[in-house]
Amino acid sequence: MKRIFLVEDDREIAKNLTLLLQAEGYGVSHASGQAEAVSVLESVQFDLALVDISLPDGNGFAVCTQIRQTQKIPVIFLTASGDEASVVTGLNMGADDYITKPFRPRELIARIQAAFRKAGAVPSVYAFGGLCVDTRTGLVKKHGKEIFLSALEYRLLLVFVGNPGNVITRDCLLSELWDAAGEYVNDNTLTVYIKRLREKIEDNPSAPAIIRTVRGIGYRLGGNDD
Image (cartoon, rainbow, N blue to C red):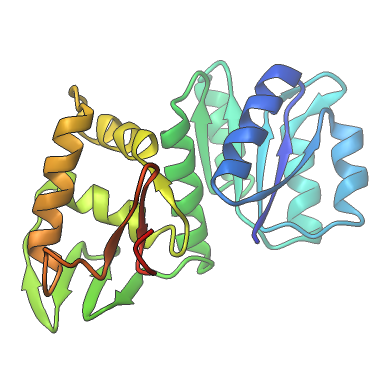
């Protein structure tokens, strides 16, 4: 399990982000200020840090400096202002990315996954059941032959290959498609997208081996039908 260090002084935001990250399978440690964050970094190793720039007893830049001195991990700054000078300062200090509040949960997860890929912590090529997905180039191949997916089909497939072994609820998939399409996607259209994707990637769409149904809940990559 990858561990994320969240440095955020707003306890409500920290609580919601912790729940979001835990739901995505990450371990989370939280610090509410600069001094607490520096203390934690002395004894705990993390895989990525989310750091608020504005802290009650200092700032996120000092925390970033401490991280850079002690740990080789991606750092994403959280900023409420979108202030250009703050963003430039953070990036010049070696931050990997920044995201401006308020932000959509799926956008944050996408930024985190991108930071892990950049750091080499997340593979860019996934292979399963004769299917090969290269997220760097966007190519999808089945038994060595390229197959072509729509933007929504590709986004849907990425959710599955990025969560191997996890059961993904229909609500989660609907949220993913909404963010990708910017349009209304309901439960019925989700069923249609799943069917279309299966027709392209499965050897036998009527008995799917890649995207398996978990009855009453959602779907998962591989495994047995429930």
